[in-house]
Length: 340
Image (spheres, helix red, strand yellow):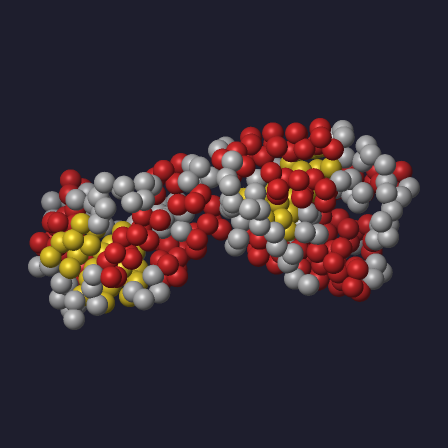
């Protein structure tokens, strides 16, 4: 039996790491992958360990959280320290060490193994973890699938009914060729009716949160959500005069909110509630106040549909530098409908 070994930070796992692991797995009978992390690093080590386990289901993926020297100049006993680490996590003899970096040859010597270099020139997969961290959207296709939700950002449409949120959300998702999380409240009221109590509003908010999570797992760097639980809390106030305590901690908020103004006509589509101008104004003011109280980033959108779309694009580009790379992709748009 040939026992193979490789290690890395996998910060984050990317196509080059997948290539390394696949080559290694084909050249040994049993592969051990050691994920090494420090508490100071920008992505939690436990997540990287989980991602690598998902990425390499046939390997023995282990996690080292020890605070270790990162370069030979960091400690006079650098190589003895790392030799002991390998032996601690792989007590059986290592036959082959795989690496794309020059350290692989010395590490193999230290543990008495043969060294097999794998694409040291990065010609097969021209990417690095540092490049991804600096510009994740520009390198999106290189990020390993399990790690993509970590880098995904959520934009939520926020505002009263009949202010163009759905149309704008669909247009933005198509522009960025990414996932839309539709308004779950519409699905819920179409099935169960528009007479909602506070319990119904919690269930609607939970369905919307689940839709956003499902979209995040498939998105190309950005989820466009047609509302979220923050807006559902305002709906609860408008419809029932208050809200369930669940809304105080409804889960992670969106990264950017697009607040749609009431400067257009109210249109009745059979599931709407507040046509009176005073009620619409009250609803809008409550929506904006909710964002301010929670300290959430938002941009107010006014004018016709094209003006709002242009302002939304500008706000998204400002909030997420480099995200315009997603709109240049050739993949077909993805959608998710959330719970039904």
